[in-house]
Amino acid sequence: MADDRIGGYADALLSVAAAEGASDLVEDELFRVAEAVRSNDELLATLTDRKLPVDRRQRVVEDLLGPQASPITTALVSMVVGTGRGGDLPAIVDRAVAKSAAGRNRALARVRSAVELSDDQKARLAAAIKASTGTDVEIRVVIDESLLGGLVTEIGDDVIDGSVRRRMAQLKETFS
Amino acid sequence: MTRRTRYIGWALGLGVAAGLFTASPAAAVPETIGSCVFEKLVELEESGSSLEALEEEGEEAVVAFSDDLEKCVEAPSLIIPEIDEIIWGGSAFLVLFAFMVWKGFPAVQGAMNARAEKIAADLDAADQAKTEAARIKSDHEAELAGAKAEAARLIDEARGQAEQVKADLVARANEEVAEMRARAAADAEAARNQALADLRGDVSEIAIGAAERVIRTNLDHDTQRALVDAYIDEVAGRG
Image: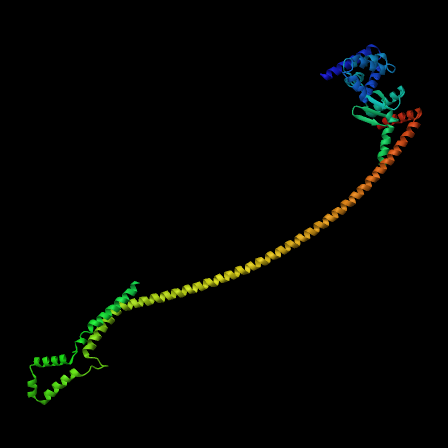
């Protein structure tokens, strides 16, 4: 039942983004918002706190995303939070992004980077992954400054960690 | 009283009675001189004679009759009995002897045999008792020897066990000492390793923290781009 509900919300998000002709942008922004919610327990608790009035929770979303995301993305996130499904937002977005990628016969590659990637870098990374795994992927980037530098790519259960953080950890293990 | 003893008693009683009765003819000898003389006179008259006839026959007849009468005053011989006494006594003896042979001797023989058998049995019993006593003595000696051997064995065993216990205690004490030493050495080694690890960790933390600060300040845009490009090349090279 919960799975159907998440699927339904995911379809709704994709339909709205497609209807507005901004699928790539909206999916990318939704993906980043979902990652932010997933990694921030306080934000997740705020969005799922039923003691807060719905309009208050929606106002939090609008305040956070207003200057950084497109109005469509902000409206979609506000809609999900307004229906009381803010806790399911990461799962809904994951389902939507994966479904969108699968519609284009691609797998989702979750990329964490310390800096923003250019379109050229994303394209070259997708080509490199294709050359390495034989799978067409759709790159979704999440900014994670804790990596210091480099990238971490997750494709399903496979993780390719090329971050400076990992190398620092390896160096620390060597010292220890 | 056994049957054999009763037989012997009866035989002796009968012998005494026979002696008394058979001796009575000997007692028929005139006990007084008068009766003897009277009997001589009666015999004379029964022979158809008389004193007057004797006197008429002559001095020799009178002397013979006088000698005959003098026999009445003669004392019986202490050595040679009278003929009738010999006869009666011999008869009584024979009767008694025959009776003794018939009844007494077998009884005496049986009693003697029984006595001999009893003595033999007693001797056998004594021999058996002696043998049994000897056997018991030998058994006791054997048991005593066995007891002594067992005691010696137990003492040896106890001594051996005591030695073993002593050896075990010493070995255990040595093991415990060695174990304590090893444990102390291991603890010291572990503490030293832990201290080195802690020190190494602290040093690495400091070094890594310093390196991270240096990296943060030196990772400019070009360096980030170069890192990303290197990563892309690395991923491409995996195939």
